Length: 289
Image (cartoon, rainbow, N blue to C red; front, side, top):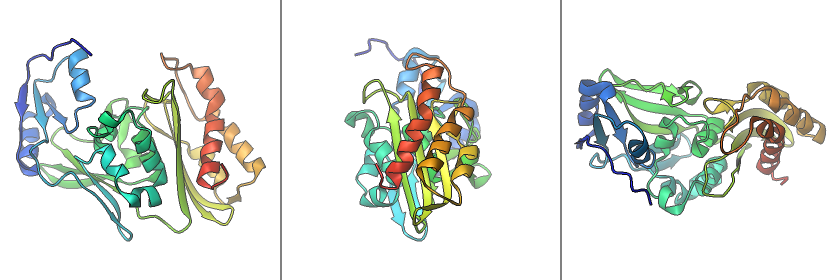
């Protein structure tokens, strides 16, 4: 257990989304927003404390996971990773996200960590972030100028930085409804199961028989933010998923990524195994592994 003591800070407890936005508009960058707090509390022990910490604990109506076959999946700002696992529709229609949630840290952390918090952390190792990037969707932001939506492709700007403005609160994530023939999968590599990933990958495929109509491929721990493998996606679209095609896909991955050496792995190792892990994820999505 850490013996580090939290530094002094002002705790703000808004009672509504409107009050939270008003506080953000007034204090802007001086406020750190906390929902689950699994990252924020650790950062406060090891880094400079924010002047003000705003908890969403008392803000009602944000802890939902709602599925509509026509509109897709809506995930509120206070919905936890464990809340995803409790929804049969997530397992059935968003398999990559369900698997990412299933392997996310420990049971204690899953009961506290929020899905939107994983996105807002803007870490390249985020498991839910990787799965959501492959699935696609939009983040809904509420600010002093109103409500706006940011596509997940435009949400991460750099390490730790998102498109959320200082006066905006991320209120929900919306994932698209499952298309006909849609299937997905998620895979990760770690030193131990509770650790952050040394490499993770997620795929979403739209299939007609054994032919790939469309594909979204995402990989984490290989760039400053989660990464779309757009050149590799092009090798899949419109092609039958033969062993030869999958081999070309696997060989394409190292040329798209820029991993680094860190305490969990090396850049060389990540490059060597990245294509293999992607191929296995594609095979799993198609029921071949």
